[in-house]
Image (tube, rainbow, N blue to C red; front, side, top):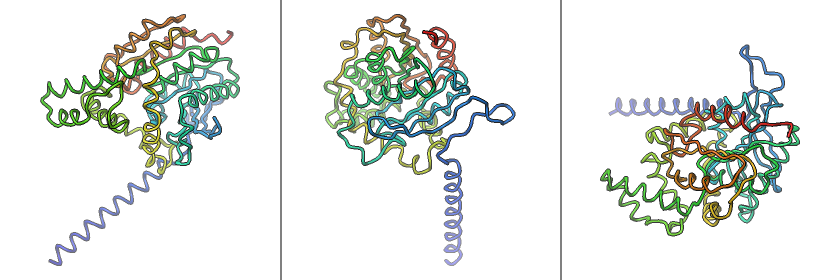
Length: 368
């Protein structure tokens, strides 16, 4: 018995030691700062920018990460999805190539990531406030980098904010890029539910069918249990490849960048989902109230929609229909055949090609 006891104690000590090493490693790779952009010899690149700032927007200081090889390059403002799900870790991890051609600006929106605080007044979490925040940040970036216009890219929830902001303030932007473009989210929620239900039936997945039956189909885009039921439904969207097409890679594709994101401290990483829960609860239903197809008929700047063919969070067919009916000086739908909802991370090389050799080449006219 004594030998067994000693063995158990030994195993416990080893496990505690390993956990301690992992904890120290996580702290080490999470300094909460951003690294300088360096050349092939390891020296900081002249005229590059790599900074974190907390910019006051709508009376609230918010996390803004700005990185680019040359401060004179055009500015690209990224609006992340969710609501409340920052994508700065993912764009830095998968899409650093953009930093060679743009000043890439990642922003944790109010209530998300490093811009989250439990003290944020819930009444400030409104669509109009978010659009105002985007507009205010745009003016800040134009002034900071001495640019007449910038580029605006919105993903998922960010595409809802992005298209509404571009529609309201077209003079601020060279072009708008929508990924996982929201069009009519009420219809999209029904299509999403139909997708997981039919896939579960086809695969005879009893667990999924029972779960989905308990949730019930959404009515006017809303589940009877609200945003939390929507989150439960999204678990099956992920499982069946409607979020990341290669479903088995979902957690690797989205989790690994957060772990290695040096711009977040360890406490930031541990609290990553606090802001998401806070934001989704307060904002998701608001998206359902605005039908972009009927409300936005014209955009006065070029628009590119980059949509995953297998996207069942923001349905491909609705994004296609929205763009078809939209009047714009230039518009193009670019399908990503091997992607679902996470186009920039599922097909990064094609994404970079489109952004650099299509969007930038066709629309960047700094003299205008």
